[in-house]
Image (cartoon, rainbow, N blue to C red):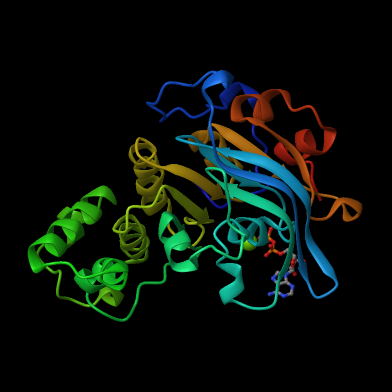
Length: 286
Ligand SMILES: Nc1ncnc2c1ncn2[C@@H]1O[C@H](COP(=O)(O)OP(=O)(O)O)[C@@H](O)[C@H]1O
Ligand SMILES: [Mg+2]
């Protein structure tokens, strides 16, 4: 089993779309945008990395963002909670509304925004502190809590991230001693502890082995009951397994950073409207 095989040709006959999903598929009338992205462009200096993208991330759904390397997936997803501004010079045009509120408005409290819209990165990035303190970190920053309250929050977040049983006897030990897959679930627990409404994930499994990847994929299906999830993945089988909606970003040079197609995952993977999407999904890209 090779989870990192981005160029694997997916045969329509064996493709299972969202087979792990337990949530009922909503009809389009019921879909509420948790994030409404309109004409979002992102620039590094003169370079336009994301090109006037408009799409919704629906509440309670898992949205996969796919496309070749360099097409702006990370830039796009990091614009959705303004985390990119911590990393360097990036300029934005357009708007992103979080349940109707423009996150690029001057009045936005960035710490609060990033608690409500959490993020998990490609490489697990636990802090060099204990497992407990990692999970408690954001909660402590957000305000005072009693020891009892904090203990409860930490336990519930670790359970939510399906790692409690593996770490409950070692909460005081350094998070850096955990395996890669455990570290990534710890990072998910750290994000869950502050009770986000949305979780953004940028290739959360790309540094993990197949077993650890499977655990995260299973976890996504339980998280979806309480959370809205957007996940960047270059693994198309993963996108087809876990997501309800898929956004395909550009392939060819002339359309860098553009959203080529967005729709229900089942449709994108079996009956895409755009030739570029079909080619990419069939492994004919490049
Ligand atoms: N900090 C940065 N400074 C300048 N250019 C960047 C920066 N980060 C990404 N880019 C460029 O923006 C484009 C999109 O990158 P990225 O969003 O990382 O794509 P993806 O995640 O799809 O691989 C690429 O051409 C990349 O080289
Ligand atoms: Mg990326």
